[in-house]
Image (cartoon, rainbow, N blue to C red; front, side, top):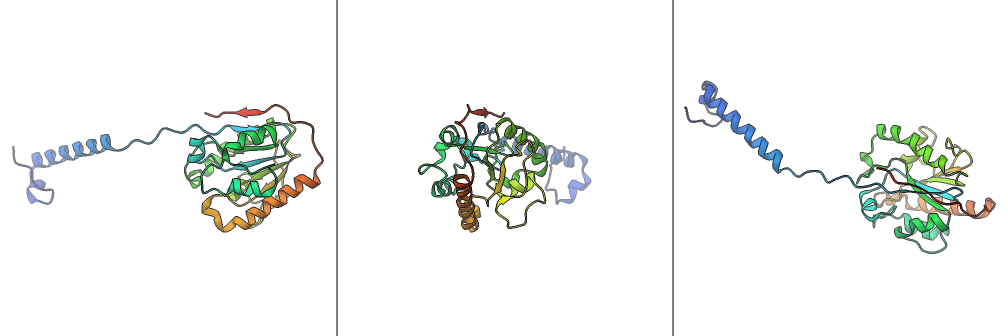
Length: 235
């Protein structure tokens, strides 16, 4: 059996046995590479919806981030400004942090959910097809919390734009002239992303929080005590 040589050697093109041996070793190397390659981490469980009938406001994100899923709380990435902005707005009775999300939904009338429930590190990985599949389920979850929240506030422009395509000017933040199917009594708001990657929009986000707080505190009549929570955990 001829000795196999380099693929660049002229003998490889002339010797069938040489070429066959070289291909066998190439397949073996590829097989070893497949075995030694790191496997993807198992999918993290998503965050539960923190919804109940009669909330004042529900904050809606694009999807749960990886750090939020690991910690079990909304907007839990240290670089996310959501909790600082919420604390400064006066919507919450005191300074709050990620671990307060359930308490806020149970006591303070502030709920949380996401349009897409799949956990990803970067929300740009969420595809248009995923949104199309998720939006009807999102509407159903919101409609189940009846009476509807006074306000539904999307915490990223893309989340709003996917649910209401073509309904917002490029830089129009705040209350929007739309209604959410199944939750027609809810005002719909949108603010810039509170992610650390969207720091350039921080002033606009702070203004939306302030306007929303003023609207809820001054313009809307008090409601009856909150009903029991409606919490859904998604596979």
